[in-house]
Length: 150
View 1 (cartoon, helix red, strand yellow):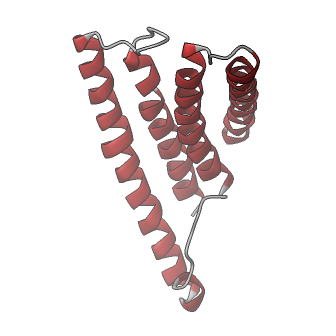
View 2: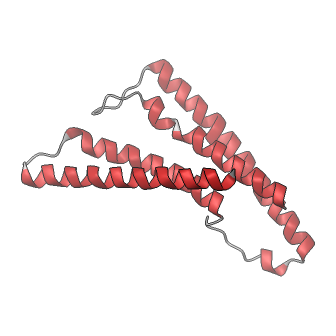
View 3: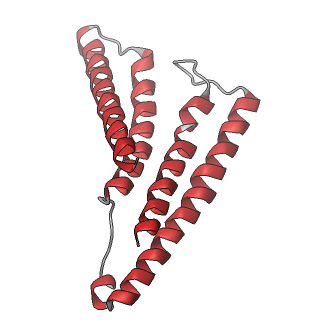
């Protein structure tokens, strides 16, 4: 299941990157060729960057490619390495749940209740913020999966 999620998440990220590239190219073209940038292109690029950043962090977590400072880990014996691995994964899981999932759902709820719309695209802002709990759930899945293999 983990490989399937990673594969589809990779495809989604490639699609979002391609879409953002086309959007930025359109913005540059309209700015220099037509004298005025399309109003919506900068906002769309910003929203796509948010989604790419958050989903990319979840993808990196699932691929074990995330940033890690491993000064302590190699100096420990195998039993303590396993304990440290479990502790770190539990800490990341708790953080993802508290900040990304709970905080993300609260942010989505507040912006939906307030009816907040984006300035140029006029899309509900809770849709932009929906990536927070999605990426949090993905990170949690990957870390729990790592804990099961430890």
